[in-house]
Length: 481
Image 1 (spheres, rainbow, N blue to C red):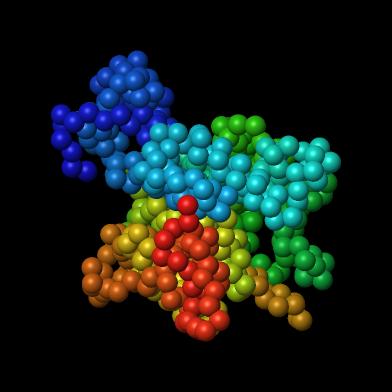
Image 2: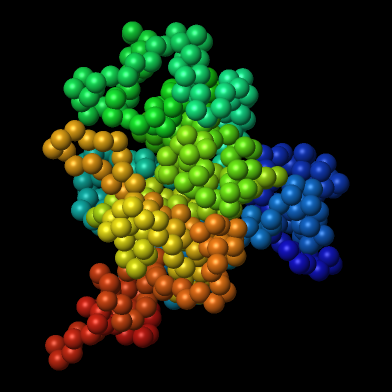
C-alpha cells in the first residue's frame, strides 16, 4: 500500500474494525504501534487523524494487507446500501453514490440498521402486512430476528468468516490426537468414547430414515446414517466434539453478537460447531501450507485431507488469520432452481441480499456438465473482474425413489489473485475476456441481455408492441429519480 508518510487520514471506523479483526484491545495495539491508548481511542472516534506512517507500521507489525482489510467491509456495505436505495421506494430521492460510500465507511452501524429495516419492509411487502405483525405481537426488530438464516449470515460476515478461538481449539485437538487424515475418524470415535462416554454407531437407513445424524442423550450414542460418506462421518463426529468441548469458546463468540432471539442463537451455535468440525478436519497451518503448495488444487486437497469438494471450498473462505492469510475467496452454493443456500465472502464480492444470482455466471451450467469443473472470468458492471470455478456436488445417496440432492458450488476471487490458482495456469488473465454479469436482474442495468428475468428497478420500463428485442424487457437509459 503506497502512501505519503505525511498525509493525515480520518479513518476511525476502519481502524477500529482492523483492530477488532486482530482480536486486540486498544491498549494492546497501542503498545504494538508505539503510541498511547488514548490516541488510539481518539483515532477510532475520528477526533484525531492517523498518518499513513502509522497505517504502514500497522501493516508491518501485524503482517496485514491493508488494501484488503481496509476496503472489503466498506465495499460490501456500499453494495448493500446501493441495492437498498435502488428500490422504487426511494425513486424520488436522489442519493449520490459518494454519500452512500461515506455512510458505509463512517457509519457501519447505521448501515446495519438500514439493512434490518429494509429486510423487514421487504418481508412485509411480500405478503405479511404490518397489521398482521401487530396481531402476532411482534415488532419490526423481532421480525428481522425471525429470519435466523439472514441474521447468522450477517454475524458471519461481521467476523469475516474467521473465528480464532475455534481455530485454536481445533489445532489443539488435532495436536493431541496426532493422527493423519485417514486415521481421524477412528481417533474421533475413540475420543468420544473415552472422554465423553459416547458410543458411535453407523445405522441402517431404514432405522434412521430421513435423519443423517442423531445424538441420543439418554443412551449416550451418536447415530450416523449409513448414507453419510466417510468425510461426512468424520465431520459429524468433530461437530459433536465441538459442542461438547468448546462450550466456552462458543458462548464467548455468541456473547459478542449481542442480544439474539432463541432461533438465531441456536443456528449460530450450530454454524460455529460446523466451523470447528471443518477446522479439525483441515487444521489451519497444514491446510494453508498445502493449499499454497498445490496452487489451490481443490480435488487434491480433498484427497489429502480426506474431505469433500464442498468442505474444502468452504474451508478456503475461512483462511483469514492476520499473520497467515490465504486468498480471499467467495463461495456460493445454489440449487438447480437458482435458490442460494450458502454464500460466504472473505473478499469484496457484492452478493445480493434481496435477490438471486446472474444466470450468465456458469455456476448454473454445472448441472449440465456434472463431472466437469468449469472456470470463468466474470466482470461486474463497475468493471471489477473476478476468476471463478464451479462444480456440481451431490449430497448423501438418497434411497430409491427419492431424488439425490444436487447443488452447484461456485468459488472465486478477485482477478489479481487468480495467478496463484492451478485453474488459471496458461491463461492471460489481463487479456482474458470477462463474461459480463450483474449482481442480479433487478439491479443490473446491462441492456440486450437475453437471460434477463425482470427489468432493473432503477430504470423505466419501455413497452412497444411493434418491436421484439433480444431481451424481454426494454428500459430507458436514464435512471429513475
